[in-house]
Length: 166
Image (cartoon, rainbow, N blue to C red; front, top):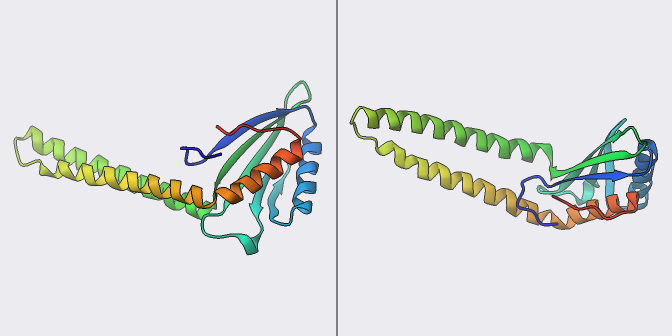
């Protein structure tokens, strides 16, 4: 299940109607004491770890369902941290990207004017910070791996098939 992606995902096609798949998932969640489901909108379910077992890096599984013309259901799953964590990581990358853009713009302008362009060395710091942010997200993913397995196995039990994470 380990993946170098920040948010592992899968796509599974099952030969069951969407409503039946969702009913099976609800049945597995009720049977499994470690899970809870939230945001049950037609065609969309979020599976989470029950509140008393959650920690900062606890994952959640977002599932979307769509039926195709043959009557099969295409299920797309996306594992990720709580939305607050995901927003924080995304915001960190955005800030670092904007900083890199302005450092590069100022540094190349100074370089083209034959002035001191030592600000370009700051790009190394920005790159190290981006790498550190990626490492932190991977560490968080590993800290939540056991709970990710719980979510994954519950989903596999509901659909009755193995699911490959990409």
